[in-house]
Length: 212
Ligand SMILES: C[S@@+](CC[C@H](N)C(=O)[O-])C[C@H]1O[C@@H](n2cnc3c(N)ncnc32)[C@H](O)[C@@H]1O
Image (cartoon, rainbow, N blue to C red; front, side, top):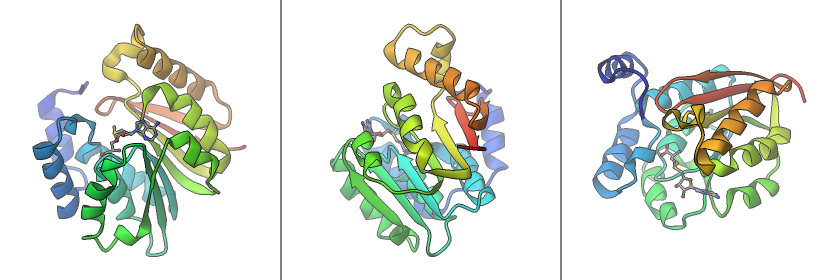
């Protein structure tokens, strides 16, 4: 769900950083071949992710929820040549699809795919990460947030997608809506971070770690 008038959103997208031709190709392939293309982060959010990565001078990024690789490649494109992006997905069918795009990009070698349950992978990772993008199963957002927090460097950012869940967090009636509402409440009360909940697309939480 978008909260902004569609024409206004199109105008904002047109006047923001544009996705690369390969990222556009991922978008078009996904729309044509997947019935879950609504899960794509999209151009406007992609521009936000790229800008945030550049602003924190990210050299290591962790993504939870890869899907067909749209946001992973978007962020990898602004990493330095020796930068690294680890992206996790539980669905093993996603690996070959995402790799078919990553292998065509000069930035693909920065990306490492981990196919497994995200919480298990995170336990196995060493920090520091400059940016973590949470975009997987909604009921685990708080678990992901707490699991990655020790791995995020001071000044690093945690970004979480879909935190308004089509505005259902205002009156949560489902497990996902309750989990996301609890996540938003906990992040906004967390003294380790400064945060803003942006009403971009389905809601984007941005939290910068200010101390441990
Ligand atoms: C919204 S999509 C990610 C979209 C992607 N960031 C993009 O912009 O194209 C969510 C992904 O999270 C994955 N996922 C769901 N539960 C997971 C889990 N427990 N561990 C790892 N990945 C999971 C799904 O398989 C799905 O591909």
